[in-house]
Image 1 (cartoon, rainbow, N blue to C red):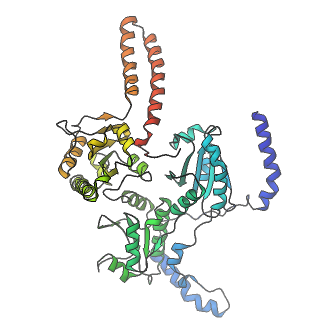
Image 2: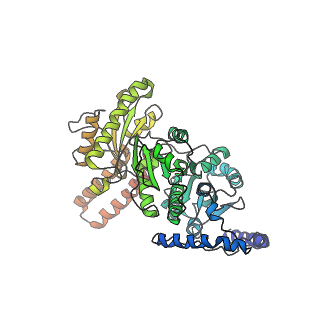
Length: 499
């Protein structure tokens, strides 16, 4: 069977070769220029000015005119993107070519197994997606039966798993596996920045998302340094799937009006969230600094936990403080307890520094979020063992250790108040609270059984070999149960996955 498969694949390759050559698939691609952030921008501008000074002579002699001076940087923010998926096809990825193929540009990848029924149902839709996203994003698929290690690296825990990858960044698709939903997802993450031409434009942007990024510059500034800053900011936002939240203002007066200041030095990059302005203080052409800043500021103080942000919140947090609320009890109730949790987050940041700097305190990253308990009642009950009667409730999760905390130093439920939440967080960081495990009782019992068996066999028989054999056998059972428990509690890290 493997021989026939290889033969068929080789035959298809040879028969399709003339057409693929005709399409230019094997044409050598031009090398991409390497960005150099240490350039002497004043020298670059001087060269540009010299070229502009020569422009009339070139035009008079019939030479090409320099159109760059009349080009719009705002237009550059909308256009000029590299074309992806030029043929509207799904690319078959393998463990051999995966890294090379996905190392540049955006890739929407289906991680699947041939025997998976849901994967089989998705197959024709995925082909249609390739056609529908022609020129927008690369579409790929990889068989995890043939690339199990690679799929494990990308935390694939069920089939099919759909991920959009872009040069080291990933975002998961968790919506309905229908063509319209998949196309909408691609268009959302691949959106171009918004061009702000009035205060109303900015206000509309703030209604759409909790965090708005604003890049402001003066359109009269045509220096190479400012153009490079715009290019770097736009590229980093796009690679982190934040372009829809990026707003560009090319009017100095409008920028200062929007930020209510006359002292804004342009170009500038800020984040608008929680009623405050957070300025970027690094080099606007420094990709590492931009990446770190975008990453740190992408959440408000107290976002609502959702299927879209659950992975980022759980995996990027050493501790995640959750306020579980009964939204059916009305707006006043929700606002009261949500404000208490937000005030606790503000108090925490005052005491320990911002979420982006807390790791330097050797305490770990702490984030806060609130949960609509009615949407996630079964998850809250199964994972944290908190029933509806006990809402509002505070849970401090420690995802990396599969642990959570629900009681204070006195053993009582954490009080859902500013002081109650802050003191509980501080006690957790100081190691003063007792953790509970998100593992099931069966998994915890299996782990205990391994150690118990080791002791019993050691005493009764005194042979290291028997101990090793017993521990190995029971360890296999425990590992199997642990894996089952891990899949059962996957919602701790990923609240909602597709069927």
